[in-house]
Image (cartoon, rainbow, N blue to C red):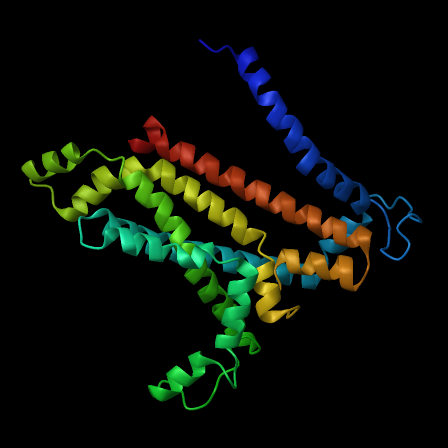
Length: 292
């Protein structure tokens, strides 16, 4: 039997590496967030206390980035969860060519985000993109649309590209969970006269819920710290600037290390709070009171 002390000894090397790889950069970022350091004079900093955070919380550009990030995360993760579940249920059924479909499904997810974003940037180009050409050919639109430049369309375009890329990840995790559900349970449900809808909500969903929660947690954390997809597709546009894009603009474009570090620290804080909230809700759902 493994004691808690032995478990901590086994975890110590991994925790040490994690502290060096993640803890040191985060600690340095928090330190700079309490100063007035600038990129062009990084050593000439002065302690500024919480003034950067106070100014950040009154900055309308920051709250605009928070709004964009939350909308992106909620909409994209919701769509990816529903589509991923449908795809996983389909691939879990016995069908010809299932292995080939599984392999093809992973292609969007396997492509690096920067590469897929640049590919979609050309496809969504207002003058030369195939998306406008196809829609105009079908008579859906009368003239080309600036998908990544028009404020009313840019965020929807970014969400669509993220759904295309990340849905396979959700489907893969859910498919792995579905394959662990015993077939005897489904056979017993048929004997009891339980229909497909009842079988899904009474058997399938409760049994795959832990894996579903993990998939939602991972994707939500990725969506909240999204940077490369938005930056490649739309640059520093305020209509699609996430919290990470805004922090990068403060750090690099404006060279304000102190203020930018405060924004980066707030990104980490928001991601951590959302992760804790999702885990807590998941535990409540899995508790006896939640099942009741």
